[in-house]
Image 1: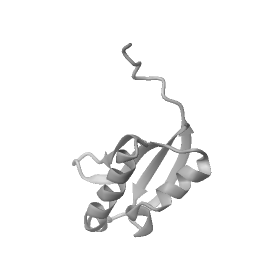
Image 2: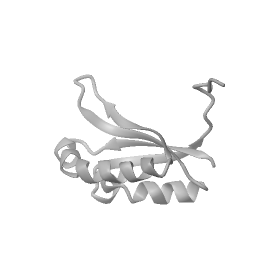
Image 3: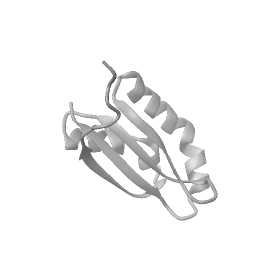
Image 4: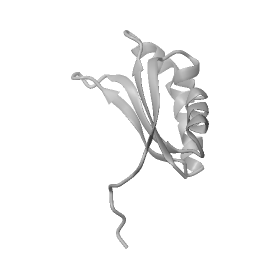
Length: 98
């Protein structure tokens, strides 16, 4: 199954909105992780270490499926992000140890 990356940037001054919706976002991500669909998920940080966006890599059948999955994220639903892109990617590293 293909992998898709979401790169999202928060709205300016949106740290409080992010914090408000973080529990629901983490629950959404935990469900995807439990289904084995997440390769990576974490915040983008500024120079002060504040969260300013997100980077998430997950498996989906198609680009449309990936986009639909990301649009169900509470951060997207509740307007935390100013914008986000969903792009197909292909894992090369890390190499698996056999």
